[in-house]
Length: 129
Image: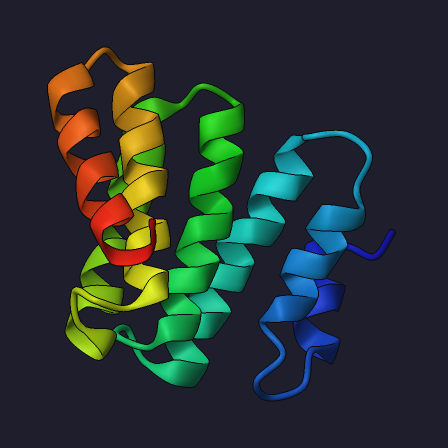
């Protein structure tokens, strides 16, 4: 597998998703996988700007990894970032906003914030059942 530096160097414009694809193809969750997801987020921010939906998507991938690793505080920060971007870009009735609500609810449930998680799931269901 290529080093992170080599991957970033050969990545053409608008190809931050290359890092995500590389990470998804990894069979083990390792430090390298986390670095690839972080690189994907950084590339998305540089290529698209901090409020672009691609940044929200990359933040969600990294948040998913952190949720898997039980790094709930880190996952929550990223999920909230994605939620905020989707809300500002698409509004509160968009499918991506609904999905972000569900992601955030999942991490909140994991840390025992059951009431807030239940509210977010209810809001998400109100958008797309």
